[in-house]
Image (tube, rainbow, N blue to C red):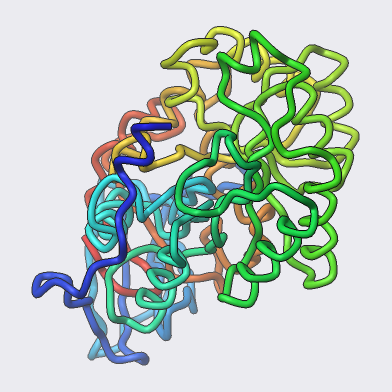
Length: 382
């Protein structure tokens, strides 16, 4: 955790080069030609025109259709290219490892138009979320946790968010929500090496976790858990945690229980498999996948460099997912976890979030590493 502690940063004042791109709300952007990914059907369809206005996709036309672009529209020809829904990373830390505003801009330029920021010190994640939403900073749509709520002396012993009793845990959760957090984040166990050596070790005990869960339920806010060890992952799932922020290390029995609980799994394979215990993480991921636990794309960016989020696609396909499964983890399934019905696919009425690449992402996920165009809420940002 020394690396994370050293990377902590306070949200800075706006930089002169951070002025966001502004366009009139009713301006029209048209992406013509090329093909687009129908993520539900899992196929590439020929594109005539995708029309965006007011931050949304308002019309979609097949090639050769009798449609004419408005005179004031900006038309961008995407012939020979592939258009995908804006990508979602469900585990980032935009306030770690560099200036938060620069981290947010790098994430958006990489094609990630929505993220879940799962922990920040001193309200930095919430403030950054609000700055982006207000148009004062460039970045993706942010769903923000408050602090990391962990046990005193445990894995989240940084940023002033640790607790020693259930009363303190409940108070910390209430304070996070009062400060504007969209969800709560708890730290239940250590890292993979701890999970291998002490699978029954739990840092945030059941009564403290229950106190946080009670606050979350009362406020109708989900709780996500850093719970990599077997006992901690099962405890979190039994108490109703919405998502595990990393792939936990469990056996087939544990995988079946996690499936039955309805919990979502946020992958973070690119970071977890690179360190001690990484082989066990990979084995567990495959058991969880076989059991049918829903898999959501997440990177723990801040540990993984910001803007390199697409490395997780290679990790997921290397672990056995097809490119389509990996893409669904970063679109439809991630949107379902976050409760965002407006993102995750290309369809009329959905958010105007798009990523354009060269090549076929259903054959080679590496084409996602070099987006040619990124559009968020109908605005070109790359």
